[in-house]
Length: 238
Image (cartoon, rainbow, N blue to C red):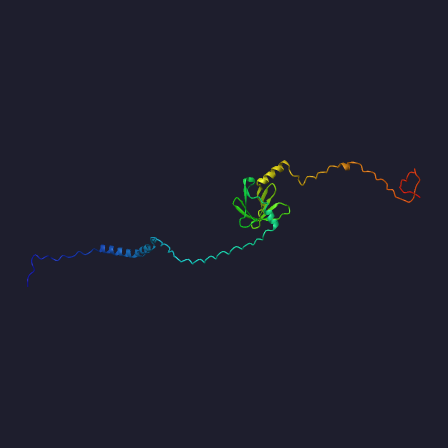
């Protein structure tokens, strides 16, 4: 049997931990076990970072097809009565053309090219279609029954009145001939209806005294003597 080499290393003994270190490690283990539930709860209670809200998804829906609009009903056709002979005579007296009015307004009266006897009146941005109407006063009268306006023409001026609004739309409108009449009336104004009637001057025949009537002589069959005065009664006695 071979002998061990004289210079072989000897087995060294490992150092054993001291009892103090073992006690410290065991204490740390117990302390960690006791604190672990609190540490776990703190981690769960820690606020989490807010998650960015996702953008709302816009649902694209196909809009229901709108129902087709019904065609507008045609306006009722207004049948106009034909003008009478008197209404045509009124239309013949209407002044046409540009008629200056008060407040700087101008009325333009034109013949209706489509219907003889009718007229087109233009003022500012308004348009009216007028027809002649008989008037008891003798004034020329035109009316638009659809819009409720009346045109009155006198010898010296004309005016446009609105029956719906209850006021005049234009006044003191006058053509050339009406302006001449208005100027003549300023020199010789027409008598007012409120003025008393003039008293007629007495005539020459009314100034003379009335003649005394002569008594009538009744004829009889009686004869009176000559040179005998007649009785005052004119009756001869027999």
